[in-house]
Length: 183
Image 1 (tube, rainbow, N blue to C red):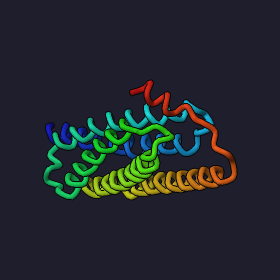
Image 2 (image 1 turned 30 degrees about the horizontal axis):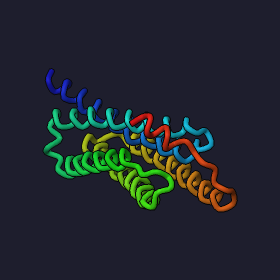
Image 3 (image 1 turned 135 degrees about the vertical axis):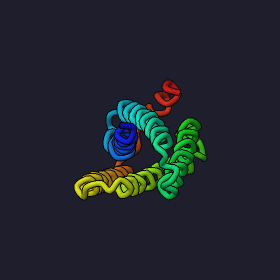
Image 4 (image 1 turned 90 degrees about the vertical axis):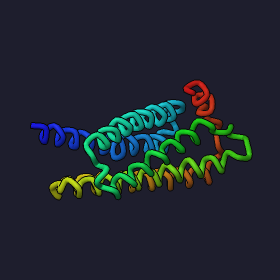
């Protein structure tokens, strides 16, 4: 029946959003936190897993629109906000200034902060989506546990990075060259 077709699209929408925002994006962020010593591998991992997340997200967003999620105004509004912020984040990432330029720190704070805000908004919207479809509590628990693990790993990785930067001299990294090569 057409109802089961719509249901399959709704499930695909949810699974793809989860994959994008709760698997690929955290993986990308963790690569930037934990793999810096593997230059330029960390940057390529961050870059390609984020682009994979964006492609999956856009497909899932289209599926959500097709299924009529327009009736779920909070879910739709938050989804549109995430879409717009994702486009801004992509733009910010594409215009990264060189490491020695005065605007680099502002760029970093913007990119870092916007990425975290995007992840929080998208994860909140995954929970809203679970509520819309009246998902089993195990799905909530799974997303919540995965999110908590990600937050702990990212926070500890950032803490280590800050502590290491205060105790060790900075060595030049090749990520600017890799970014220019990938762009």
